[in-house]
Image (tube, rainbow over all chains, first blue to last red; front, top):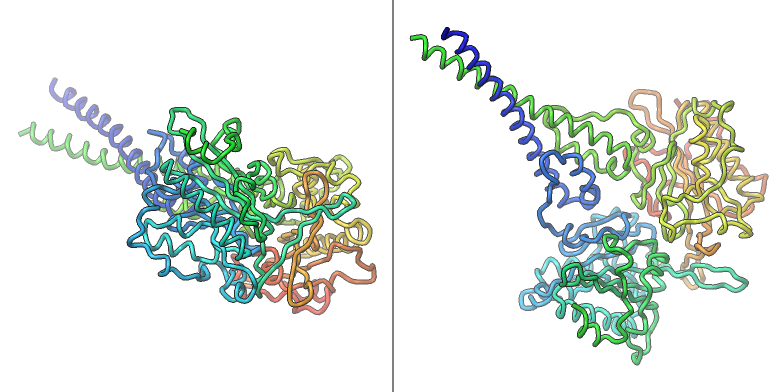
Length: 318
Length: 318
C-alpha cells in the first residue's frame, strides 16, 4: 500500500511545483521586461509616448505604474506635437527641421529649481549648435551673426537653475529662435518670462509651453498668405510671433487648473503695454501652430482669461 | 533504505520540473507579449518606429523577427519624419497640422497592384475630409471650393488599384494639396505620376515619397523669405513646389538601389518641357522639407542623375 501513496505524493508535488514555477517564470519575465522597458521610456520620448499602449500589452499582474522620471514629469499632460521630439536635462523640445527652430519647448518650473542661484552661473553657459541634429537641419552660430536678430531663448535660462547642466542646455541653438532684440527679447518677452517665474514662485509649480508662430496675414481681395524671413546659410526661419501657454495645477481635490496663453509679435513692443494685452485664446494658438496643449485636461476646464488682472490671479487661484 | 531513496527521487523530480516549468513560464510570457506587441506594431506607426528598441528588450530567446505587414513593407527604408504619422490601407502619411497638408506620403508600388483595373473604379471614390484629424487641423471640401486650385493627389489614385478601399483612401483630403490645375495637375505632375507607374511596371516594385515644399526666395539685399498663400477658412497652405523621391531596389545581390528626385513648381509648366528637366538633388529636398529619405541606405549608394536619359534607366538598371 505504501508505493501508490508515494507515487501520488510525487505526482502531486511535481504538479504543484510545476504550476508554481510556471507562474514564477511568467512573473519573472514580466518583471524583467517591464523594468527594461521603463529604462527605455526614460531615454526615448517616443518610447514614452507609446508606453501606455506597450504597457497595456503587459497588463498581466498589474497596470504597470511607472516610476517618476523627468520625461513623465515634464510631459505629464501630453505632447503638443510629435515632430522630432528631443529630450534635454530639464526641458523637452520638438524641432522643426524645415524651419531650423523648435516647434515647441515644454518646461515644468518648480519653485526649488528657481532658487539654486549660488552654484548655477549663467555666464558659464555658451550658445552652441546641438550636434545631435543632422548638419542639414542644424542652425549654427554663423546664421545669427550680423543677422540683426537676437538669439532668443524659448525655454528661458532663468527657469533652469537647479544644476549647471540644466542652465547650459537652454543655450543649445535648438532652443533658440531669431528675436528682435530691443523692445522684444530684452523687453516684453523678458517681462513675460519674469511673470512665469513669479507664478512658479507663488504656486510652487507651473507648466509652460513656448514656441514660434508663422501667422497668416490678409493680402487684400480675401486672400491670406504666410510670409517670413530666413536668415543665415542654414536658412533659419524668423517667426512672426511667439507664444507661451501656461498652466497651473489646482491644489484643491478635483480643482480646475488655471491656464492662460500669450502671443507676442516679433517686433519692438512699446514699453507702456503690459503683457496682459497679449492674452490669446489657446485654441487660436493651436490652430496657428498645429499643436495640441495639455490634452490630458478636459477643455471645459480652460478658463484662462477669467481673471481681469494679474494681481487677482495671485489672490484668487488655488 | 527505501525511504531516503524515494525522498531523493521526489526532490529530484520536483527540482527538474520546477526549472523546466520556470523556463516554460518565461518562454510563454515572452511569446505572449511578443505576439501582442506585433499586433500593436501593425496598427500604430509610432509603435512600429520604436519597435526595434522595444523588441530589443525581449531579446531573450531570439531576435524577434516580425512578420511582414503593410507598415513594415511601405516604411522598409525608414520614416522621412515623425510628425503626426497616419496609416492608410495602402500608404503612410505624415500630416502637417500647421499647414493642413501632408509633410510626406510614402507608397510602395507593386506591379500586381497596378493591374487590378477591373474591380477598382476610380469614379466610385469621392474626395472627403479625414474625420480622424481633429477639426481644428482638418481641411474641408469648402476650403478648396472656388479657391482656383485643384485638389491634387500626393499618393496618386492610379497607383492604388489593388482593392477599392486602397483607391478610395487616396481621396482623403489629408492626401490632397492645392495644385494649379491647367499645366500642372493635369500636365507635368500627371506625366511624373505616369512615369513612376512605368518604373513600377518595368522593375516590379518602386518606393515613392511625395510631398509639398515651401521654398525660400531671394528678396534682394541678401535676404531670403518664404511666402505662400493660404486658402479657405481652415487656412490650407498652397505649396510653392512639390517633390517626388523615387527608389528602385536592385535585383543584384548587394546591388546599389536606383534613386532619383524631382521638384516641380506649383505653376503652369509648358508642355514642351520633359519631367527630366526637374531632376533635383535629394539632399536639397531634404534641406528644404526638413525630411530624411531612405535612411536605411548608405548615402554613397545614391547616384540618381547618372543616367542621361529615361530610356537608359530602363535599359541599364538591374
